[in-house]
Length: 264
Image 1 (spheres, rainbow, N blue to C red):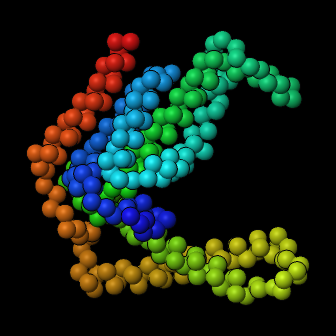
Image 2 (cartoon, rainbow, N blue to C red):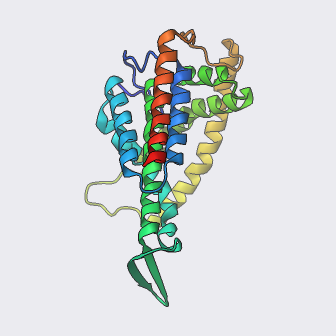
Image 3 (spheres, helix red, strand yellow):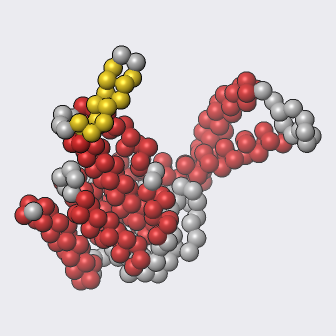
């Protein structure tokens, strides 16, 4: 298995998860994100069951478990914006922090809410990573099309995906050119930070211009080769009996988690 690019998490393989209809995987991913959002704060057992479901899918898909765990950490910095709930939600005092003339009190209920938000974000990102790691982008685009997502939105996502590689390529060329023009002898004094800052500003402007010109050439080449707004795929996208059965089983499992939450 090989990952094609930093921006493309799809890992080519033959597994039951890879062979599923993309519509099943898209609906299942949305369902598990909604299930995480509906779980109450502090439902650690149910969060753990959700994580075990994701781990089981990872093994069936023949993916590296560390790949899933490390990639899932990308959600944590964004979830940190909810750190204020530790101080704003009333409840039993857990700890207090003196900051200048303020006294911030961390409550037990606030801490539980904060950790629950972090857990939801982490699990939801892992589910999304599983989707992108087992479904190629053309299949994703076609799956969204079959699910009646507006065509304009799919087209925007498709071009955004395509031109990420253009930006990445042009940025690599600029960095390589800068390294070639700023070579220095071993032990010599490195340029000041101001020099790097000035060059970074120039590179951003050059990146925009070069990427714009190259993207125009890429689009014209795509049109010349028959591009009409859709990314083609060999997948027929026909729901089979197995697809329906697995989708219903997965959705039933998530409904079961919600029923457990109600009864406990």
